[in-house]
Image (cartoon, rainbow, N blue to C red; front, side, top):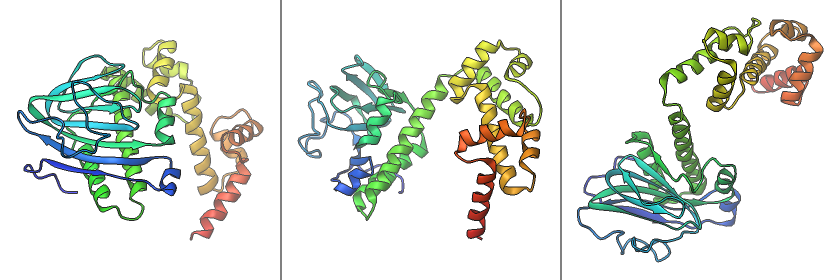
Amino acid sequence: MDEIDPKTTSLLKYLVANEMDEQWGLTVTTAGYHRIRRVSVYPPTRDHPTPYYFDHKKGRVLGEFQLVYLTRGKGAFQSKHLGPTRVNEGDMFLLFPGEWHTYRPDADGWDEYWIGFKGDVADHWVRNRFFSPASPLFYIGIDEGVTDLYNQAIEAASSEKAGFQQLLAGIVAHLLGTVYSNQRDHQFADKEIIHKINKAKAMMQENIFLPLSAEEIARRLNLSYSWFRRTFKEYTGFAPAKYMNELKLQKAKAFLVTSDKSIKEISILLLFENVEYFSTFFKKATGKTPLQYRVHSTKFLKSHE
């Protein structure tokens, strides 16, 4: 969708979902944009149906999630779990179902995008602590990619073409994935730490055929092994040894599909103690023995030639 015309003050859509849409696991209820001008009534009373309108002095409780993104201006936000907080352009906040909240721009107004959604997928993300009412505020910055996603959502919601709910669900997942990745990266604001972790990953990839241990990597980077192991796992989601095994697994798959090397040769190249240990490792990771994987993959590739 093209960039919103500066003269536009509102673009919004409220949606319904059928039973099949709900089975997808994530449905979108609303998507829109407001340009709140200086000393304007907030929120605009004429634009929102009753369940969504709120008096910012009293706040409200929604029965769904909403992800709100500010691209101009400043204001205030508060929720049950977060006290009065200043918000600025480039900030994004996530509203949770059943969670009291309120927000409003300063007198100069602001520009806001939002998308509302609900479903088992979103509930799963919260249950597994990817997102929490205790931390609803995120700094994204003015990101053209993010605004483009909101604009795509508004366009899809307005057109309501066949399958639009599934398209919108993908946009929500993309937005929240961007938020989560951004927040994870901010936890490692020290560029030297990021450099060390990336250097360690490169060393693992470059030395996959050599007996290089995680302890030796930590030593070469002048890091204590306990600190390195903990920080590497926080940053990548893998312990160093597990990450190295994942690299070996991917390399083994490539050898099995694209080379005529024997399973024993592959196990030796990847420094497994013996072919039996390699086969056990491979089956535990994939559900197939190396031979079964090779046969299955070869048949699949031939059927698609």
